[in-house]
Length: 384
Image 1 (tube, rainbow, N blue to C red):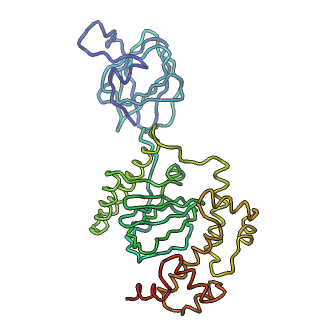
Image 2: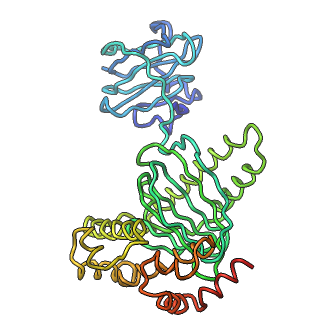
């Protein structure tokens, strides 16, 4: 990005005379050379003595560097004095221009290169939004899980929601949000008696941009929550500029989150190698359980599928999810049974058989222990 030329910003490379003190300038304008500048090329030099530059008929772009690797670019609209040893390069701004140059020792010409047009390099660039949904789910909602090649944001607007990703389970309450990265398997569900309302946005973003935001829950600040609400209003408005507004607001939301995690008081987000390996085992186990929930599942079978011992899998589940793999299997089977009851295509005996319960009585007993009501009572509650 082209910077404003002033004494403070330029002090590492020379000085910018104020013009109030005639002794400050040693610029002999009568002996100055006039260099023509083109928008196609830049002229590179190294100062061998104090070198004075001043814009001619129109301003140019002055680049300066101490080491030849890191450059600062300035709009040359003032007289400057570059100190000995500093590398500098000159180019036109928007059209052909000229610069006046004076030095007791002519600068070393290092050659010409194709013009570089300085611009801001964006850290985060949301390239497109694929889906933008506002969900109002039934009590005990269950989403069995998926992974897709784009990023996704979930923001809870009401109630609470369990989010499971990479072997970690987070409870998202009103005002909380979480991000899933490309290819990250995740599932979501609500507790019995809880009907969550939440926003999901799936989007494309430049590679690695949201990686520091994964594996944690954010309590949305007022600014972040305001952006979500503004995006919802733009979604309802649906005029020709709405999507541009939403893209810009989502980009800003991600930048605010990245600034939050980069603050000195922010906790370290990325787990160490050992923790990451454990989470990957749990993630694979959860994904296998979800995908085979209607099979007869046992802890040894799941452990075999993720290539660990049953005892180690049990240790990992207790350490990270505070429950055993067996209890997790029962929980997901019962969540699936609620979905089947809501669909109303199978009777209770058929549901018990589909989920590999030994008897319908065994299924009914576990259902009541977990949810505090029988399958029949739950069916009445969701079917009116």
